[in-house]
Structures are given as structure tokens and as C-alpha cells.
Image (tube, rainbow, N blue to C red):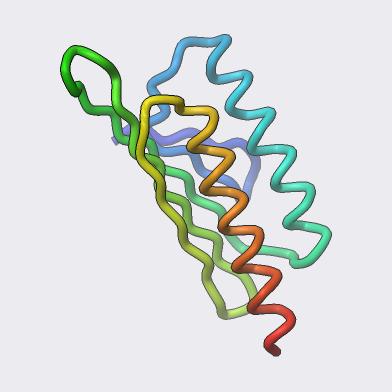
Length: 104
């Protein structure tokens, strides 16, 4: 399992993208990290990518986990557009984080 650190609290697992795709993915992630940090100082954000072949096309599965203040927010999505999936997962995590903060 290949893992890379975006910063000390952010881990990308199995991101097998070419350099330009990885730059785009990191920009999407960094944008959401700014939004999440506006609401909470989190301990860890893990984003894992799984790649499958489906009818000779790449099919992606993105799983996200955010750990903050003794809570966690999780999300997952599957499909063919990795950037849309990263956006969808992080949007869900952001919403769940906001919801849990308001509930406290």
C-alpha cells in the first residue's frame, strides 16, 4: 500500500495518478482542507483510492476518513471520474463535520 503525506495531518493512500492528475487532486483536497479547518482543527484526514478495471475502463473507489475532537466523519464514492469522486467524498465529510459540530 503506497501512502504519501500532503502535510502532517493528511495522508493519501494508493493514489496511482500521473503527475498532472495528482496536482489537480491535491488542489481539490487542499481547497476542502481550508474549508474544514475553518470549522475544526482535525487530527487526521485519510483519503484512499482503489482502482478497478470495468469493461476496459478505469473505475475508482474513494474512501475518506476525518478524525477530529474525538469524532470522525467518513464518506465513500465510486465511479469513473476520480476528481468528481474526491470532490464528492470531501463535500460529504465537510457536511458531516459541520453537522457533528452543531450537534455538540
